[in-house]
Length: 423
Image (cartoon, rainbow, N blue to C red; front, side, top):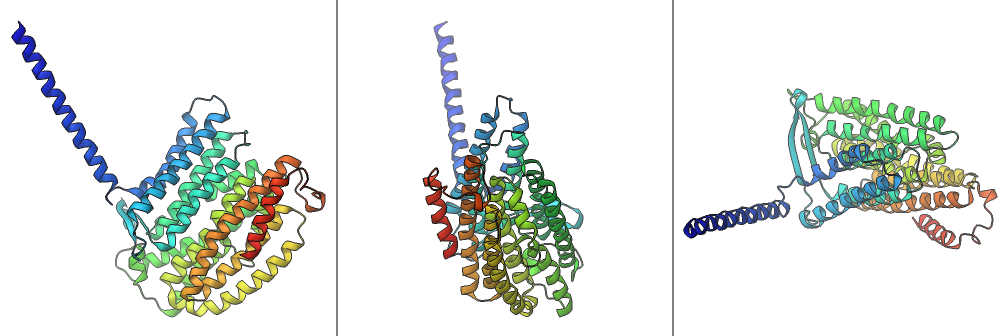
């Protein structure tokens, strides 16, 4: 009898050792996956926000606090994953595309899920994570339909990161459009008194620009090849007749001019900022405008260099006019948020001049302006919104003496205003 118990115990110990052995093997495999470039970092970073956001509707309804904390945790987790992936798996001295992921998506037309990061897209992706996390914190006072509100913010998060990391033209277009409907709903449902007018104007401008973007993407993808291809690397090495390249360039330019925005396609921006909730304004000023600048560099400048050299003098003239016109118009605005919006349009003129200069110094300056204005613009809209939450005033001629009841906000607003002036 004792011998049987001894055999059972020995068998249990052997099985336990085997389980421990395979557990250690699994942990080693997980460690190796996370410390090598085989792990699909970019796919996880792009898909996580919208997937986690869809789970908001299945959370038990225990008040808005649970939803808000859940969204903030998702944004912070996303930002930590992005920072970790770029710190340990991105080589700053390597100018090539890194963390490349290429999967067959749809057989028809050779649609591919292709993502990659280089020095141009590194900054905007990190900026997107940081600004979205701050915007989620700024949305804490939102209580009406908070589930839908936070889901839309997370959906925008995925679309924006997907746009900055796409290496396929069609995937770029899909990610570009992914943030369109969330912005429209955020504006039309949580905006001010004229929110429907502003939302309609926004959707007309941006959807109209998207038509030109789609035509350009299909034209570049279908030209000069037996099989349609939307691969960025293939399109970069493709040569076009001058007239056709100019047509493609104009189509992409219209699409990106609406989003950047470039004069005279900028009038939707002040109305949108004037009516949107300030957390939405942070996303618009900090990230959405930068998508237009990124597209102008990534597609117009890289894929269509000859047409870009032809249009660059005219873009510099338009950028100069935009700086002066928007800055002058900003001084005449009574609405604080509209004044900040026109100052953003003026700053976009500097980015346009840097892109049109076709020099390393100008391009580096444009990228620096993209990052710096992303922080400053988001901060100014956050302070304008928090001021409105406290004093319920948005018109400048009614806000005299706010330094007395809100000294800290006044100090921060003055500091960021000086930073905006310096930029």
